[in-house]
Amino acid sequence: MQRPIHSAPRRMVFTPRNVYAPEGMFDESRDDVSLKPADVQAGTVPQDDEPSDGNPITGGDDSQREEENDDIQPSSEEPEEPAVEHAPFIAVTGIEESTKSPETEAAAARVIQAIYRRRMHPVRLQTTIIPRTKVHAAFELCLKQDNLRGWKPSRYRLLYLGLLPHVLVGLDEGISITSDIKDQIKQQLRAEDYKRFEELDRRRTEITALSKQGRNLRRQLEPAATFHEKRDVGALKQAVIERSTSHTRLSSMID
Image 1 (tube, helix red, strand yellow):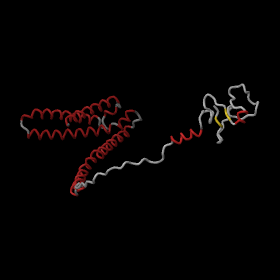
Image 2: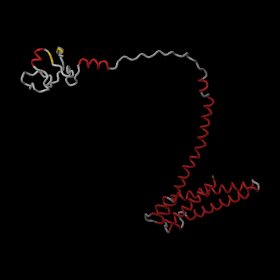
Image 3: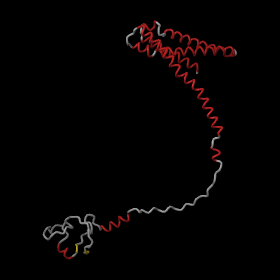
Image 4: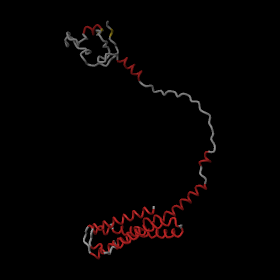
C-alpha cells in the first residue's frame, strides 16, 4: 500500500534513504536505496515493512510527536485550593496578665544581682590579685639572691627563678590555713562534750603535723638558704613533691 507524500515542509536528514539524487547516482540493487526517480515523478513513496514517513531515524511523524510533547508539558495553571471552613474565633483573656512580670519582681532581681556582685568582687580580688602580688614579691627575693650569688645560666637557676616563687607562696598559704583550722578545733574542744573529744584531738594532731611539715619546708626552701648552694635539681624536685603531698592532705581535711 502506498501513501501520498505530505506537501508540508519537513526537516530533512541527509541519509541515502531520503536524498533526492539523480538517476544513476546510487546503485538500484542496494537495499538501502528505497527512493527512486520514478517514484518521485509518480508522487508516491514505496511502503517498507515498518512506517518510515517523517523522521527516518525514529520512524514516526514529527507533527504527531510534537502534539504528544505538548500533552506532556505541565500546566502553568495553579490548582484551585479547596475551600476551608474557618473555625469560630475564640478569645482568650488573662494571658498577658499571667506572663507579665510585676515591677516588684524585677526590682527584687536587681537588688539580688547587686548584692551578689558586691560579695563576689572581694573574693575575685583575693584569688587573683593577692596571690600574684605575693608571687611577685617572692620572685624579687629570688632574683636578688641570684644576683648576689652570680649564678650562670643553668637548669637549676631556671627552676629557682621560675618555680620556687610559686612553691614559697603555696607553703605560706598552707601554713596560714593550718593555723586557722587549729584555732577552730580549740574552740570546738571547749564547746563540745567528751564524746567528740577523741575525734577532734586526732584531727588537731594531723593539722599540727601538716603545719610543722610546711614550716620546715618553708625554712629549707628560703631563697637565702644554704640548700640552694648545691644547686641539686633532684633535691629541689623532691621538696616540691613533698609540698604537693602535704597540700593534698590538707585539702582532704578541709573538705
